[in-house]
Image 1 (cartoon, one colour):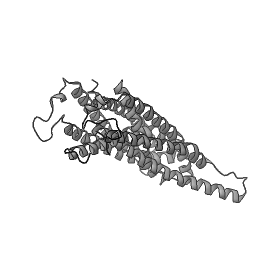
Image 2: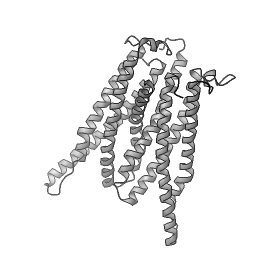
Image 3: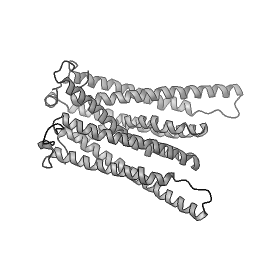
Image 4: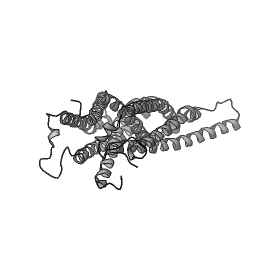
Length: 175
Length: 187
């Protein structure tokens, strides 16, 4: 049972942290060689799928993380390297709290992308719009794209931080 | 942590753990993202552009694959050394719990065997299938030559798809074995 929960937890984090690395390193690189109209189509399709995968992966890490935390006890922890304790006075407890905070920040970022930035980016001007309105619409989409880039980079950094915090738990926590 | 006498060992354990987990995340998460996010998005643009995008993304992704496979094995060995299951500086190298008589040892060896399968699949994709997919036609190629080349490319693309799905499955099984190690292994 514990092995399966830990496995699901690993898989959730693996997709969550590996996804943005691939999107940044692979998809963004390929987009640089594509015409802008096709970049928009690919971004829309990939973004649509990616946000649901990300939310599912984050949900999985949250649920399995809580189950793993509930099954932890000080007797089990005592047998681990550096004999950590489930307390804020111990690096293990503090690292767990930091991990929970980073997880909440990631949920906020992905929700921001899924429900605000991505829909704003997908909006397109219509030919029957007055020229000023088209310009305003284009400027809004441009701003949404820029914001999306900042949020994606922040998500990448935070997911690597979360991975680091999680990995440090095997050695009794980080700070 | 920093006041601990074994601080160097602890720091190394944390660093190896972070790099190891990052390698696994890059491999599994990257393969899933390539197959189920980038792939379908690629199919939404015209075929000629889709083929160029496919080549660019696959070439770039292969770097991630080889980098993460290398990091996984190196940091995996170093972690086993730091945890005392193997010794890289004395003889015998393998600790007693690394034998096939122990659950822990069997699980580690099964993970290593599956890692070797991933490497073999990676070699097939990099040195056999990718060159076939990237092959360009020379001027003056006959219609039969074009058709034969297309056939080779389609066959290679089919095999790349199959191997990628198999790799995801194998990597997911390796993750299961890895997660079970904290509970002394699964097999």
